[in-house]
Every structure is written in structure tokens, then in C-alpha cells.
Length: 458
Ligand SMILES: Cc1ncc(COP(=O)(O)O)c(C=O)c1O
Image (cartoon, rainbow, N blue to C red):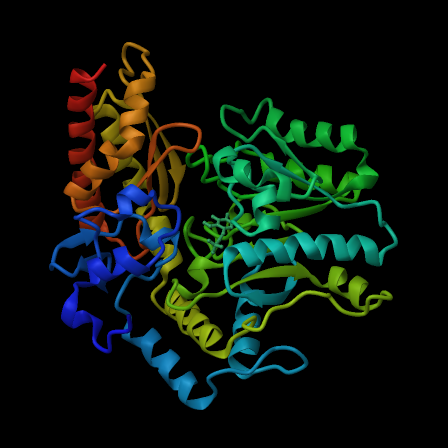
């Protein structure tokens, strides 16, 4: 029954449990007495309705890059709403969309200059997949529809993005609904610059499928699934060489990696490559508004526009939304004015040293992988003795024990089970030495309890 003032009769927590469906959350975990309700944020910290403070060690979900509580972003959104709350980018432009596109193009590597806006990372991935197909069709290369992706990669939840995603538990329930053109090959885990076997795997797959059927290769510059997979030196230039050789488009899915996570506007720059397309989202607005997009090399767009299709047959109502793009402009200005790239690069070594100190201290840490402001801490039972987690330990840690320790330490980092048992760490980029110390000490508490748990629960 409708209640005009629902907060009179129930707390936000009860209302959420009753009516709000969570994303990627087990029903039992949601329907729990200690379901948290975050209501406020400031800098690198957020606060729940009971006044508890948490260190946001994940930047929301790898996205509140400039931190919480920015009044200038709020002002930019309000000003734009007063001026023009909405008008579509179908046949018309609007000033903030044009300005945001220009700022992104100026910061993108090489000749990536054409920016297409959507509202999320998944939609950004849909856009690159459909653009790759459009480009090949425009050239009369109509057999090219397959896409090569990597095991344990994450490219979103919409059916195209999910098809290229390589995380079995996300894909399996939907397999009959996924398109048959995706091939997953090994990722860079365990590969070396000398071997580059993970790049060779892509070339082998292109040859096995027939290059004339392959439209694109899509990879994250640093892969999140399987935990902070930084590619070996030379991997991306080798992908560029392979894709050029076979007429395949190279896509960098930078939904997490762009806008400073590795101290550059785009991670492709750091890895020495100009891809044909980049998908982005999250950090473009520091998540103050939902915005995603793709950047494409101009000759590719011209090929589509000059073909019989004459247009890229794809779009959405909210693509290029003036309020979202006005916030993107404010965010990119703040990133430049506050020299956030220099900040990340100057703190990178200290961040790494702090993560390495956790490895040295805790025998339950198998490996720390990552770069910039992005790390995965992989767990095992006994590093010195070479013992991996038992099935029961893994199930318990992934089934709620780690989540409880993380919550108790009042830190938001992600207990991750994609290919290993891990903690993913990715704080706002504004985190300074004090915040990084706080982050390290809270993770230290989590790892101490994890070690104690493993000692008594074989
Ligand atoms: C690399 C990558 N691509 C796509 C997505 C999907 O983005 P969204 O959740 O905004 O749809 C994500 C989300 O984390 C991602 O990390």
C-alpha cells in the first residue's frame, strides 16, 4: 500500500530490503540486519546512516577518482540543469557534449579523435562492438563478426558486453542468449616479456578462425578479473602488430583504466599503443553522473559515413546528456588543475611499497599485482610452505568471511573470487600519503584476521 511518508514507518535499511533490488548481491546478504546504507561522502571517506566512517578503498567501483563531496561538480550540474536539462544528440549538438568530446579527444592517444557518448561502461562496450562490425560492413568485409577476448576479462553485463566477458559465473546462466562469435584466449597471467605467449595466443586464434572472419580484439590495458593483470612489456605493441597484420580492429576497454588510474588520461598511452577504439566510463565524471563512451579513429568513422550505411546505426536517448557531459568537463578541468596525473605518478612507488609490506608481513598473501592506484592482493594458506587455500577455506572466505573482516575494518575494498581469492584495492586518486597509510593499516587488520582464520580452519 502507498505510504506518503515512508520514512515515518521504516528506516532506509528496511525500505531497501523491502523494495530495492541490489546488483550482484546474494539475496541472503541483502536481507540482513546489518545491511549498510551509505548516505554521505567526503574526500576518500564515506559515511553510513549510523554515522560510521568507511575508507573508500575502491573509489566506489573504480570510479570516484576525484573523491567524494565535490561542490564544484554539484555546481556544474546545477548550472547546466538550469540552462538546459536535456536535449538529445540525434541530429543536434549541445555545448557541454561538444566541449567534453573535445577535451577527451585532445587527451586521447594518437589520432583517436571522434567521441561517441553513452551512459555506462556496458553501453560503451556495446558501442565498440557494433562499431567494429559497422566498419567492416562499410568496407564490404561482411564476413567479419567475431571478437577475440580473454579469459576472466570483464566487459559489462549487457548481452554484447557479457558475450565478450570471460567470467564463467556471469556468463553461464545466459549462454543460450549470447552471440556465438566470441573466442576467449588466455590472459597475461604468468606471461613474460620474453615469451609474450598471451599475445601469440591471440594471433593463433585469429589464424584458427580465419582472419577474414575476425572483426576485433578487445582487452583491458590492465585486466581486473583474475586480479590486477599488468601486461608484460611489449604486449600491447605486439597486439597492435598482430591486428594490423590481419585487418582486425584493436579495442582497449579502458572503463576502469582511463582518467588517471595509472597516472595517465588513458592507459594505452602508458602501454605505448594507439588502439583503433577506446571504451571509457566511470572516471570520466568521477562517477558524479552516469557517462560512458567510445573514442574512434577518424578514418574509421569516415569509412562508415561514406558507405551505403551513411550513419553509425546505434544510439541511445541519453548519449551526450548535457548534465552528464557538463560534469565530465568539470571533472577533467579539476583533474588538470589539481595535477592528478602527477599526483598518482608521484605516489605510485609509495603505494606499491605499502602493498609489498603487506606481502612481506602476511604469509597468507600469495602475490600483490597492480600498478598506479590499482592492486589485487591474492591469498593462499601458506606462502612459505607453498600451500594454496583448501576448498573449504576458499568457500568460507569467498562466502562471507572476508566481506565481514573488510566491513569490520571499516574499509571498502572488494573481496574478489574471479579466478582466485583476492582483495581488490583501488582508492580515489586524490588519496595522499596519510590516506594510503590508513588504507594499508586497515587492510593489515583484514589480513591479520584472515591469517588467524586460516590457522584454525584448515
Ligand atoms: C573493463 C570494463 N568494461 C565494462 C564495464 C561495465 O561498466 P558498467 O558497469 O558501467 O556497465 C566495466 C565495469 O566495471 C569494466 O570494468
